[in-house]
Image 1: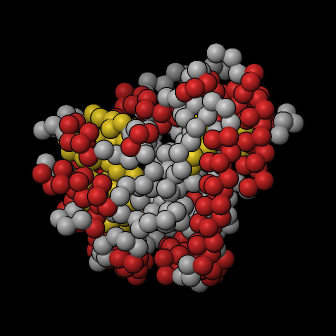
Image 2: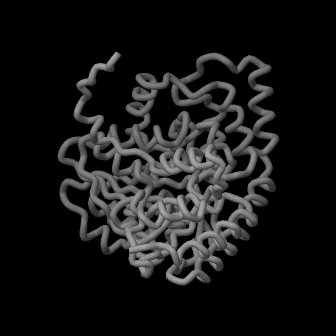
Length: 394
C-alpha cells in the first residue's frame, strides 16, 4: 500500500536538522558490515553521570516523584539553579526567574518564538549550532549569520556584529564556549557585545551549556555585565557539565517579562519536566564538583593529544580550543570541500567526523572532531587520517 503524500505546513520546510545524527547513522551502518569506526562525530561526554546524581533520581522514583509538578519546575530546584548561576561566574537569580525544561533546546525554541516574528532579524554565530538558524527560520524571522573567523580565534567580533545590526534586529545569539569551534569569548568581548545590545535594545540568548569545560581562564558571561541581566536569556543545562545528555534536562534564567509567556508555552507543549529527574538536577547543582573536574581534566589531556596530532598531518592545521570538547581543524590546503573530506575519512579511514559546513557556510574548509573519546581512540583516529589522506582525490 502506497502511503498518502502529506500536505505539510510550509513552516516544516524551514526546520533544519543536526548532521551529527546522520553521520552517526552512517557510521553505525558501516559497523554493522564489520567495519571498525572511531566515533569523533557526536558531541556528548563519554563519561557516566556521577553516581550521586543517578542515585538522587532513583531515590526520587522510590519516594513517589512520579506525578505532575509546576510547569516551570519545583520551587526548590529553581532556587538551587539560581544560586548555582551565582557561584559559576554568572549572576545569581531568584527562583521566579528560573525555568526548568526537558533539555536545553526547548529554551532556544521558546525564547525565539516568544520574541521573534516576521520581519525580525536574529544574529547568530556561523559556524554555529545549527538550531539557532533553524529555529529562527521556523519562527518566521530572518537569521543573519555573524561569521566567526580563524584569525580572531573563532570568537564573535563585536565590530562585525555592530555592522550587521539594523532596526529590525531583535535577538543576538551567543555561544561560549562554542560548538563547533571550541572558542570562548573574553570578558572584553562580552562587554563590547553588551554595549551593542544596550545601545540597540536587543535581547541576548546566551548559550552557556559548555561553561564548565574551560582550559584556563574564567568563564565570561554577558549576563554578568552591568545592565544585561534583564535582557539576557541565560541558557544552561545538565547535558555537558554533568554528562547527562540522555536525561534531557535544561534550565535557564529569563528576563522577568518573558517568564509568564514561556511558562504558557511549556503548558501548551510538555506540561512540565519529569518530577524525579528534577531531583537529579538538585543533586547536580548542589553536589560535589570532583567528578566534574576529573572529566574536564581528562578532556584537556585529550585536547592536547588531538591538536598536536592534527597539526602533525600534512595539509591540516588546528588552533588550540579554549573550551568545550571540539577541535575545528583547517583542511583548506587539501583542496577538497569539507563535506567530501568528512565522507572520505568515514569511508576510507573509518573515522567519523563532521564537515564544518554542517554548522553553516562559514564552516567551509574545516572539520569538527569531538574528542569525547579515549586517548587511545583519538590516537588511532589520527593515525588512520594521516595514512588515508594521500589517497584523497580532488
